[in-house]
Length: 300
Image 1 (cartoon, rainbow, N blue to C red):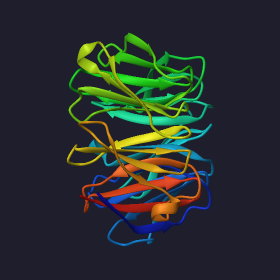
Image 2 (spheres, rainbow, N blue to C red):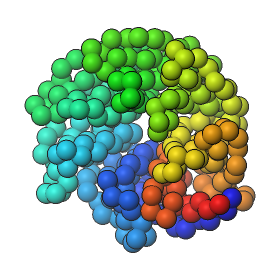
Image 3 (cartoon, one colour):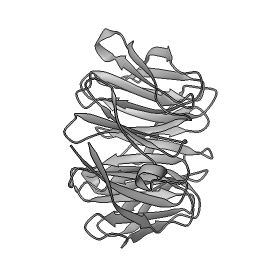
Image 4 (cartoon, helix red, strand yellow):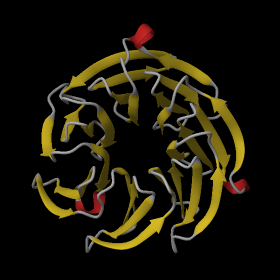
C-alpha cells in the first residue's frame, strides 16, 4: 500500500474538530475551535469558502440532505441551520447549554449528542424538540445509525456503548465496552459490525447479529482513538488518534496495513481529531489540533 500526501488546507485559526462531506465526492465542510465553518473543494486546494462564523467552538456538523441544510452544533449555544443554497442561517434554537458532540439524521428526525449525557431528538420539519433521552451521567460523544436493524448506538464517557431502538427510542442493550470514555462508534457499511473507539486507545469490534458479542479487541494506538472511517469500496478502514497518527486497516482481516505519521509522511503535529474518506481519487482527509487539514492518496 502506498500513501501520498496530496494537499494541506490551512484556513482555521484554532483546532479543527470535525469534517463532513458536502454530499459531492470532492467537497467537504470543516469546523473547529475558531467557530468558522468552511467549505472546501478537493479540486481547488486551500481556496476555502467561509460559510458561517458562529462565534463559539464547533465539535459537530450534520448535513441534512433532504432540505439541503447544514446543521451546526455550537458549543453551549445550541443549533444553527444553514440554508446551503442561500448561504444564510435560517433557523436557530438554543436546545442546550451543554457542548454538542454529534448530529445524526434518520428519516425526519435529528439525533443530537450532548455533553450533559442527554440525546435530544428533534423533528426536522418543525425544528422542534420531541424528546430528551438521558443516557449517561457524563458526556455523550458519538452516535451511529444502523438502518438495517433500525437501531442506533451511542458512546458515552461512562465507558459504555448503548444500543437503542430507532422506532421507539427504547434502550435495548448497554455494553460496558472500554476502560475510559468512548469517543467514536461506527457501523460497518454492511451493518453487520459495530466499531467502537475510546480514550483507552483501543478499537473494539462487535457482532451486531450475535447480540453485540465482541469479535476483536485491538490495542490500536498509543493514546485515545478519536474516530474511524471506512473506505468507499469497504475494503479498508482508517483510525486517527491523539498520538498524532492515522492508521489504515484491512476491513476483512482487521490487520494493520499502514501508519501515517509525521516521521513517515509529514503527518500531523498534534492530535488527529476526525477523518473523512472520499470517493474522489480515493482520498482520505484528516483534521487536527495543529489547525491543518491534510489530504492523503491511498493506493494499493
